[in-house]
Image (tube, rainbow, N blue to C red; front, side, top):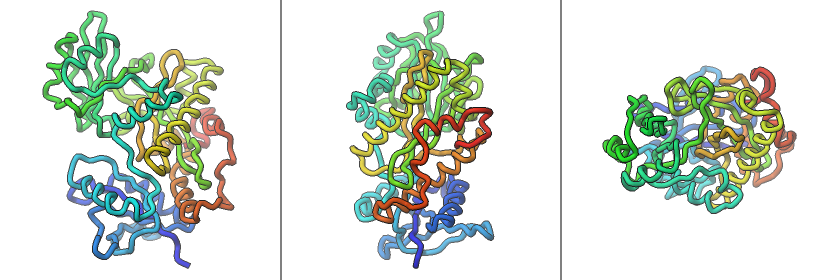
Length: 392
């Protein structure tokens, strides 16, 4: 009997056909073999529309080499295509437009940051976790916004990884310090401006209708570095949402973001929380972000269609209140490996495959699935101790 095939659909990053997540794909292929699921990798550029086949990337676990082979369309597709402002992304959109309702996908595209914010704002149980957010239309928008807030972030409506993000913070002098990274993640030179000068200082950034203005959440550590938390919620082998893990991220000095790609450091969740909050408050924060993540995942799925995983970037203010900064429907999971929570990392890799098998089998419970054997709080308790035990 032939194995079911999962096709991981990604995008080339350049003309040399470089793929960003090869290490992750190799782990998917290895775990797929253990589960009886063949995993291949392809991009929209590899599709032969006439014959409905793909020029797939295959990985030989024994030889540890990649090869190419023409194969028919996979039974299920796991979409890992992150936004790119180029023709490669438009080819992805073409493929989804043609086959979105004809092939089985684990996940559906969701809107950009502004569309998602507007949608989530409609949900009264999620709304208290959303920072005030506006679209940048003109310089008067940012001038008005900073009058009422001492900390503001500006971020592209599309894009990930901390690219092009700006931080605007009011100083004791009444001036505003503008810091950030350009679209290549390079740190830009800090600059000071009055509230009325901010728009002029940012004139070359092409912000109109392409950027959001967002209420900033104070999250600096004692050494001045910013931090936040990455929570990963995934479908398990029984088709149910379950929090896989949550880890802290601390930005490098002088950085306004904590993204790992921008030089950030991964830190166990409880290590960060216990530095600032009492044990009772830590327990309450964990329960609250767990409940919030389920509400977000279920609400987005009701509105966009089936999803298999979400990464939530969360800040916790000095009062212990969580804030949802951003959503990522194509999340990375290396943060768990970096803090030594290898069991959680393995779970984060395996769950999309377990969910794919659940979908392939018509939504039937997997007899050997470990899903739902733990309570909702267990994922956090795994992070106790020195961060080198289970959990990532």
